[in-house]
Image: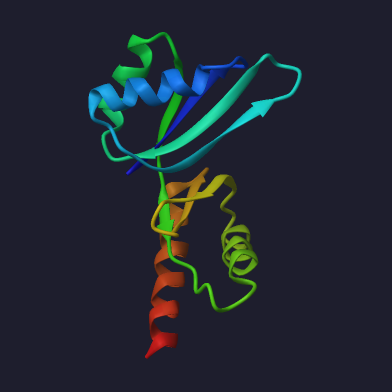
Amino acid sequence: MKDITVRLPDRPGALATLGEALGRRGVSVEGGGAFRVPGTGAGLAHFLVEAADEAQEALEAVGLEVVEVRPVLVQRLDQERPGQLGAICRRMAEAGVNIEVLYSDHDHRLILVVDDPERGQVVSDGWESERLSRRR
């Protein structure tokens, strides 16, 4: 899966245009969010998609600016254990990995876009291994 970043005009209907364009192309949104950036006349949307190339083509065809398409780390947190978000973010920080975007997908998993995907994947894999061993 990939995170696609889209710059949106700050006006009614901008998100509708995005959603309709993806829908016409058959691209499903698996998670994400959109945010107005005060003082810029624009917003930024981050959406999780499987078909990133198709999504980019569809969005550019309707005049939306795709800023970037990036790999993501997907992690499941133990929801019954408070402090999980802070713990995984601290683990990334201690490894020198900067989290640039964070949101959840429709399956209640944490989605991270990081500055160093390879190092981040090592941290994420270690976290997952520990999480699974705690459940045994």
